[in-house]
Length: 114
Image (cartoon, rainbow, N blue to C red):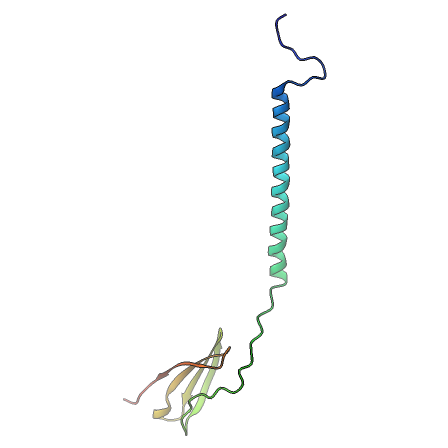
């Protein structure tokens, strides 16, 4: 009987390696499951309670170039831009674009008489 049969209670080295591999795989699965739970919880929390918008610093009074005799016809806010349509006469026709965070005039579109 020249076979190498392990005695009862003694494990073969291959069996030990197999057990070690199974333990490592189970441990990695547990780590991945915990990471997935943490990431899913963080995403759900941000959907339920989004971060508050940043506080805007006050900029006081912002003087916009409105010629004498002209009036504001239309005002709209788009993102952090304030858009004003100026009218009242041919020389008044323009659109002003301002930054609502700073109150600065970013630019204007003028429509000269034809």
